Image (cartoon, rainbow, N blue to C red; front, side, top):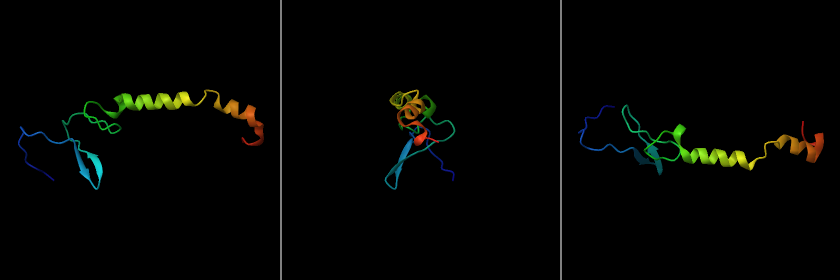
Length: 78
């Protein structure tokens, strides 16, 4: 679909469809994060996603498998 637009009009970066927020991307569009939906960066640069990943990594101990074996032995682990 092609639409002729006036260059002086801002194009929205998101629209609402069926109650969901949908990102609109095109060649030359500003970066839009698909995780936090902000318009100033891409998902790979998202600080909110980095924080979430770091929290989930720190919540689980590094020697998680070893602690399971110590607690239950080979009885429950294969």
